[in-house]
Image (tube, rainbow, N blue to C red):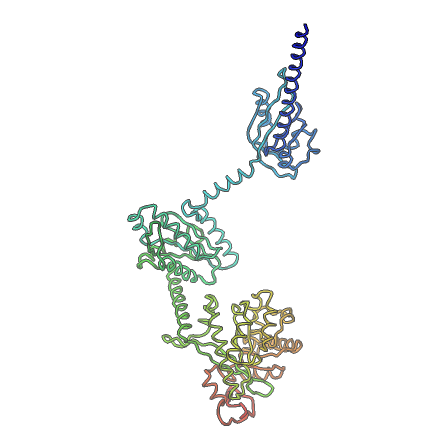
Length: 607
């Protein structure tokens, strides 16, 4: 009996142990479920049978932007975007009721109002009697995924699969935009149609994989030679197209074409397996707006020009217009000669006297560069200075002018000549150099010329192109002792603001106002106003282009300080200027009256 009671007690204890373990397991399962609910990256929401929210996980809050307090007790309509029609929700609930679940894409709205796309699964939760007691929704925000997919489709649709360059579709769009912009800015643009010479030989001899590799290398090399704003596209095969917008001169497209041809032919392409390939290219150019009113017209005309280039022996370019081809060739030839002139020292300086109107004496000269080409003779400055500006050759040329002028000025000082200073023009490109004052300092040191013997001129229009540190640059130059002058004053966009801001010493009245003075009353009023303005600001004023005695008398009458022009002498080489001014001679007669056209400036330096 006792054993029976013991066995019964043991059975009870064992039963209790099983129940405790079962409860503990259930408790652990609930804890694990809570952890999963809280840590999953998918949004999870639990609602009652009326679709009122009774629980959400942190991911749901992060995706929708709502707080838990804002959602509990609310209906799921709080997330509706309005993009789905009522029939959409009818089909969704029919599936949930009949099948117990629904899944698919749905557009919802975040708290901030942003609409997003999610992949949603809704399941009905039933009790032991089979009754629905809750609904559970689990969703993933797929907006970013869809956007990346759309971006990839966009890239595939608009880019060449081999080179990843724009294809014909994107090229036409970019070209249309460039034509519209050119029409607004009243500037020109160009289409360059490029065909690789002997590319078929590569495909036939090395195989198509080698040809594909070569096309990729060509695309990269062409891209490196173009500016970020230019468009480079591949139409297929070995045909590439470049769109250049906002050209200063239409024929500049020829210079770009020549650079691209040289870039492809000068260096061999290294292919896999140690093989090297040398390529050439022919280019046809159509300029807009004159060569076509639509992108299709321009491409067709550039292609026609390409065939013309191929017919002239390949490895060259042709414009759709024969006149532009000739102009571009001439421009390119001029640029090549200009580079050679710098290498072979073909430039010389001429000097024009600067005369004080108070006593009629020469106080200084302006140094003006001249190009003595061995083939065509003296080249006018207006033919090569703009080209030097555009190509950047103005930097080395301007430095040569400055150094040569300073060396000559130092020689004049040693012979005690009447010339006390030399004026040198600085281009906008030179002035944009961050170390311009150091460059000037180095030349003054090299030539042993005192700073006060040098006057630097910069045009009024160039001042407006320069950055905000111009005032500091001028101050640094003036710290060297040099004088600063504004050249061609009045011809640009005269502003009292920069006259007040910048430490300028002299204004040079543009020759366009002097030319018709004093007959033209308007020009004369402008001259008088500039003189008055300079006097009020404590600046010297010099008139350019003085050619007649009447002009000189009018300038003297209104208090102009200085003048230069053909009335006093043309720009001359140093040797001829020395003869005219009597520099280096034992004696020179004093000037007893102002020079006139009939009595040009002669020797007037004191002995």
